[in-house]
Image 1 (cartoon, rainbow, N blue to C red):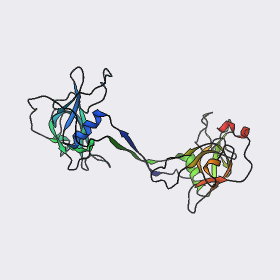
Image 2 (cartoon, rainbow, N blue to C red):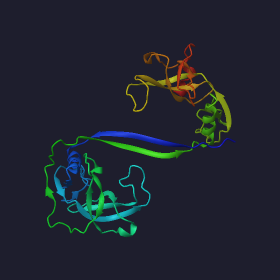
Image 3 (tube, rainbow, N blue to C red):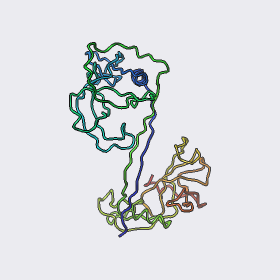
Image 4 (spheres, rainbow, N blue to C red):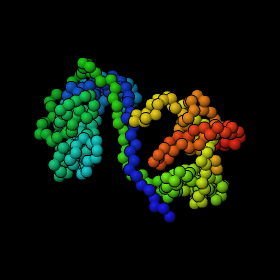
Length: 315
C-alpha cells in the first residue's frame, strides 16, 4: 500500500474592508498615539470601540479618549511565538482594561517570564516606532508602576488629519496537509498522467477525486478505477477578476468536468477556446505541462457536444 502523502499548505486571504467613522477614528487615533473608546447610553466605555451597543444594538458614536495605562484582567503565557505575532520572544497574551474603559483590550505583554505576570498588574502601552493606523501601532504592553489617573475619559470628536478609511487584514493559516490513503493514490497516479477514482461497492458510483468512502452509502470505496482522460463540461463560470500571484489572464473559464467513467465532476480551467464559446456539454481533454503533477487545463477535443441527458445528474 502506498504511503500517505503530506505537504506543507498555506491558506491565505488578504481581506480588504472599509471603515466606518468609529473604527476610522480608533485606528487613526492609534497612529497619533491616542486611544479612543465609545460611550454607551448606560455610561459604559468600550475599548476597542464598536459601532453598535452589544447589549441593545443601538448605534454608538460618542467617542472619548482613555489613558494608555491599564490593568491586566486575565492572561495566558505564549512560550513559542509564531510568525506574524506581536513579539518574536516568549510573551503573555493579556486582556487589559485601560484606565477609563469598562471593557478589555487583547494584546501582547512583554515580560521576562510567566512568573512576572499576574492578574491585576499595572501595564502601559509601548507604541510602535512607525505607526500606520492599525492595531499593530500598539507594539505591545509593558509593566508599569503608574497609578490610575485621577480624571476619567475625556470627550473626543474623533477628528484627525488624513484619517484611515480602510484596512487590509491578512488572514493566513499554515499547516501540514495529509490527504489520506485514497487521495494519496489519486495524487500518485497523476504523476503518471493517469486519473484514478474509487467505486462504491453498493451503489457502483465512481468518485473522482476519491474520498475513501461513499458519501451516499457510507461504505468504504477501495476498488480503484481509471477514468478519463476525456470528459464533459457540466457547468462553468467566467472569471473576470485576476487573482493575486496567479499568472492567468482574465477572463478565463473555470468548469466542472465529468471525466468519462466518473460519477462526480471535478474542477479545472478550460483553455484552447475563447471564453465566450465554452458551453455545457463541451467535450474536453487534459493538457499537461512539462514536469506538471496535474493537468494545466482542459481543451476541446473536437468531438460533438455530449447530450444533456448523459450528464444532467452531475450538474
